[in-house]
Length: 304
Image 1 (spheres, rainbow, N blue to C red):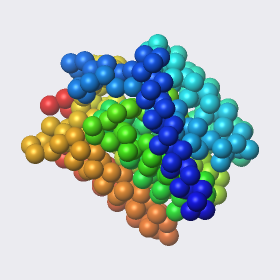
Image 2 (tube, helix red, strand yellow):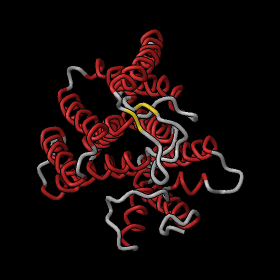
Image 3 (tube, rainbow, N blue to C red):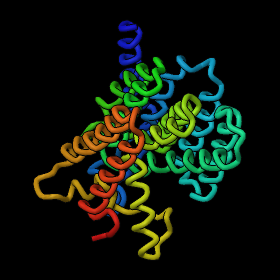
Image 4 (cartoon, rainbow, N blue to C red):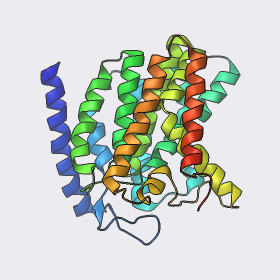
């Protein structure tokens, strides 16, 4: 196991290095602007492609994971290159997640089917939203997946952690490569895959536990949508007022420190989700307290 994990880590490092070169050659890069992309230099995408190929071998016989992952990876890569219309993107996500839920969740109740589909689409987009600062998305997803490992016991998550650790070497500030939409869609689906796995194991309790483990992503998404709609803007419009943005504007807080604080918040939700297994009500209450604390403390509901 240790040898395999080390091999996955090294493979991720090698593939990430290769993706840097390939993305530059193909001109699949993210250029800074004065609003949504404040990074200092042109940075290649395609980091998520390297992560995908680092871990997909361990899931190769699980078509319920592989096929949606490939679809969303391709969707994201196209979005990286062509800037896909948000409504078309969400439609493809909806159809992909709907098919996955029907085939994998073992659920027949229409209420749960609809709720799971909406949860999956929301989670994919929340992970995409949080991918706006060096290392934030990679590190927080890594922590959330580690939390799912303790919840579900799926040994394959360990290889996911190894692959993300290798990529994070290049993605932490100052980033040499970004996940890109291909990577964030793939990672968002990966989290949802394990949320549904948790649901399959213990139904309602598993679903709630999965929501708690992904609490940081849903917190940022909820307040982003609230902030935009309260100001008459489309939920699909971008801004620089996500949690990591608010943190980075605090006095004495660097980009590196902002990323680390985000990791702490992700870890808090992960701990709550796992230690409250025998008292679900307690876990929900504590999670809501953290949710409200983050939103109010950092004024995520406003552009100020």
